[in-house]
Length: 313
Image (tube, rainbow, N blue to C red; front, side):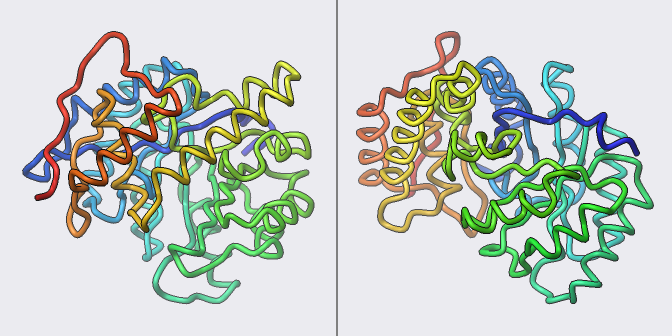
């Protein structure tokens, strides 16, 4: 694979997976959100990631979402499908399905729950790379999946043929910087949008992944757009606003995936319900989220009103 041919950059959104009150995927709502995020200016979309509750989906549902997302994106931006799995054959099968659906790449976290050695993790990625000719985005989120992709391990993985980038979600700026320093000449390093903002872009990040576009529209991409304009003060102001809103929404130990869906529903976007064991928020939490979003200038999409999902009693 010619890694230099992969030009992923900019502000990417990790999409939610909306479910209806019976727990089924709201396919119309999902496609609508893909369209809204693209209209809002994202440079790429990620489906079946952590924000998409991949752990609550069957493999068949994940494959279905790959196709739905590619269809809804309609070639306007690249689509990356999350294909992480504990078993290597499952990750391979999902990655084959993502390629067949038309995804531009796959995001693969190291096997979770079990604790494989560094050599096992390298072999896991080599097996996927050898089985499927599709660009691989590494995914480092040790707080959730137990097994960190340390900078030293990223250095080894950067030489795997199909590995072209990493979503560095350790939330540790030093870890992000070290990965960029040690492997940035071979792969693209993407932090979360709220981790460093324009500072991360200035030292070599090609972009960032964020969840704000699910509920905040065009302003969610302002860090990257301001940076491109050379407006570092504007990028800092956008980062300050994102951090303030993030802190307000996550106050009180609320689950971040549930909060995103609640914010979407409150402001006319198709967030839908979470899947058990996660439950919708109650009235008091919803009131706090509405107030925080109104204070920070959130608005509804101009062209459509989406019904708000019911809340827990």
